[in-house]
Length: 421
Image (tube, rainbow, N blue to C red):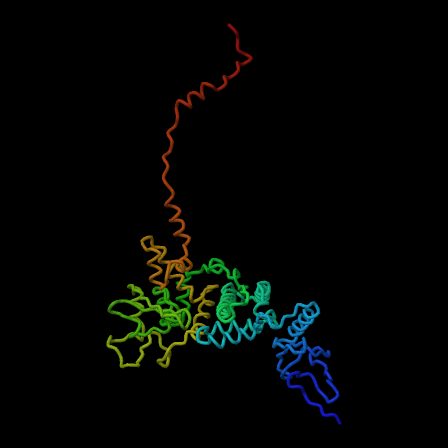
């Protein structure tokens, strides 16, 4: 019996003493020697050709792309344009490059970045394409498919575009240093990000809605949470993590806020002044400390603790208290973050408050973000437009013009029964 064994370099080939028997491909069911798997079932395909007494092979990736590379090489050999020793362009599979990028920058991407890039990695528009083959049209098709979902907001679209744009910039920067002889790879995500105006949200809490919302909240502590958010302008993450010793300074009447863009960015801090209304709200809280002495190291005195004295979970409060209160008050399309918009809008209503001062109160680096938060109220709009109105004097009647018009008027015709002299 003939001894048969698998060729370690051929994968799908079986060699015997009398020659080579080529088995059918497990995917396309065809017999071809130029495309094979080094490890059967690994879905990593190679292309190879026989040229001038030597075998030239290359690791490609997917089966379809390997067939294309093999056909291209065969055509170049037939036309005399096959130069295997020349410098060629390396074609990295986009899914592999995305996976490598996520593993390389695990600490920088955060939860959102890893989730967005994983979604791109599994997208059908990316499957089987190299980094160089991916085009702007493919990205637009991905966005159109995702836009069919009712929850695909402009903010989510910008996240998809931004993270993928950063990946291409990082890939091109590494390629330029390692393989400078290759042509540049254009970033297909340029120009796809929407402007900030397209995703601007114009929503704030009116005075009437505030009264209804406060009346619908179940407890004084819940009402204090909403009032603190309005009169401080803090984000939900800062608000529910407030500590009497670390963030609130009652002597100086200030509250400290903080924010960070990405895990590697520096933490930005700012202070918010406590006005009289907010001071009364804080003093009315059950957690208000009787003395202002600091605790032992490691101790925490939460401003808004839960029933067990620990940290109040904002997501639990949002679903358990906030959403039912909105339904009871009949308020629609109001997010908790809109209370921060309410703070900026009410500050803007005061003519003596400058936009730069509102930016400092909200912790914005510049006034561009503040312009998205501060909305002009309808009543304030009328007052602004009314400043252009000027009282105009009533013109005096022109008596000369009236007399002229009276003299030019046609005289009445004589009556028929008038007796002539």
